[in-house]
Image 1: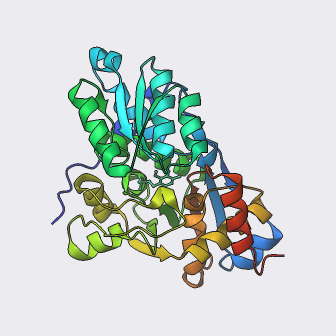
Image 2: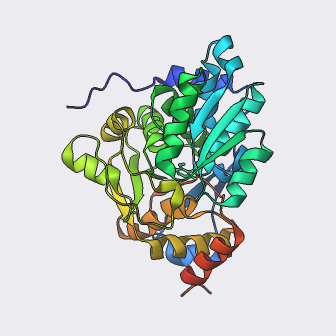
Length: 331
Ligand SMILES: Cc1ncc(COP(=O)(O)O)c(C=O)c1O
């Protein structure tokens, strides 16, 4: 049985939101209407997008990184932070560190997209390139032993507290929702968002969305404990966590009502629809909520539905490939 104790309270979430003190953006929510989505969405439904792609660094990740770093003791903050990332987490770490006057070191595999490596550097991080992801973790551990504070990309109460602020903000902006869709990689985003939503609106059904080729949370739900998968195969690189972890798993198990798997083709089609109709250029993870909602559309007639558009860091060539693959049927 999952321990219900770790859920952050609404009061804690509200306090974390206030502590951002303007360093994290309150991103807009938007009711999506357009001739293409109106043909595809559930009958008589109302769709709201949480435009978190407009967060600093282009994804929701600074909410968690900032919440973790704000709790560090002054001397720890002064020594600096370290993280492992192939992209969005590294950028968030760099951003939050700079905002708090600290130094960030990001260990990145050489396979990380050069644009993301450059973005981490441009945001002020020191980037250490390693041959692969395993050696990136080894490097981060070494730096942690040297005194830097390790900031995990998705696990832990403070990270979930940070992502919960997104759920709080969204519901305040749009009012009552019947359903909310949110992407899952490791599960820190969904853990926090679902915890906030279920306390504010217990009747809102929360759907967690994973790529078919990175379904560690599905397997973890089935097994009743966090699971690791052998291989990650998805175009949604930000959702490619090979493992679920205890805290975020427990929160998701408690507050996420249902998990939905989406294929790479569905992700591309959702990216193409967001681009054509909402004029939003998002990365595959940012389209996952829409892809899942379209899959479930028959049962969502008449509902008020929220989609978290969680990120937009994709290089132009990869974006163009996804649009070509996904545009069939969109006029
Ligand atoms: C844009 C984007 N969306 C979703 C996720 C998934 O978040 P989590 O790993 O907390 O489930 C990530 C993780 O890096 C991300 O960068």
